[in-house]
Length: 81
Image: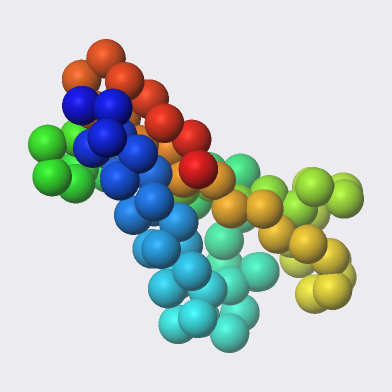
């Protein structure tokens, strides 16, 4: 279960990158915080979060960083990527 949880967390990150690539206005269309929560994948779930660590505002400056976090859950296991 722990290996699957890790894979689901990695899946969340890949989905996050695809959402960014597909939407040129992603900074305005995605909130700072949880982007997707407890999405079923395989036999577990993933949650995707995006944060601007400098000021918690993704919309104010396009040069500021983004930290994507993928959280995978399977059974009793939770993995962060």
